[in-house]
Amino acid sequence: MKAKRENGTLVLTPETDLVASHVGNLRDYMLDQMKNNQDVDNVVLDAHGVEIIDSLGVNLIIGLYRQTTSESKTFGVIGAGKRFMKIANFFRFPTLFSIQTTGE
Image (tube, rainbow, N blue to C red):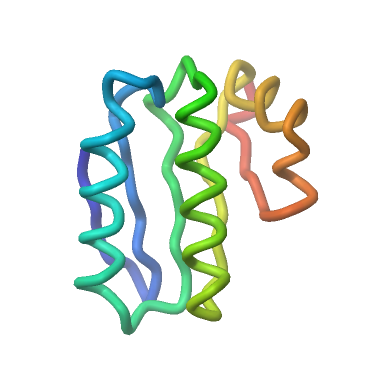
């Protein structure tokens, strides 16, 4: 997991699948990063390394979206591959926030 700031945007990169065995640690890390970077206007999840998302991973993404919007910030996803988009479309994520695909 890593995080970086770019021009008023906090980019969160899980570097792992969003599955039950990882979600607890990822959630804690992401929330800490958001708390430590409250002056940013945007939060972006970089999904380049994400291949598998289970139900807890979906809850993590929705939780990040809700947290950022409750703080009047925008949320989005970049680097979404085909597998990520299958889940995203099933749960209608694109109706909630922007998703940039890898073009695969």
